[in-house]
Image (cartoon, rainbow, N blue to C red; front, side):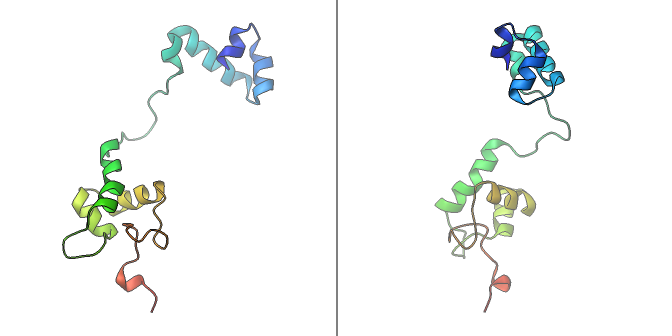
Length: 119
């Protein structure tokens, strides 16, 4: 978008070519003019700040695939949540984000708990 603007094209033409509204082109053009390349970086997002660091997120699938819990053959979502000091919801979301599926990866923390298993 910015490169097209740098060619001397106006916001209307750039917006039409890229399939966005004219205001979007104007916003990014203004950010670039005011702050150069730093203006193209994502700014803070609305909502509460993240409470789980990238390193913590990465540790969940790593621990799942490289370690076994004491006294069990595989991690459950509750046991991994306790181990990592985060909520079960957070562990479940991380599991989904990394594509860990209970019936596909046996070592997955998302495995079905005994009471949920058929038969």
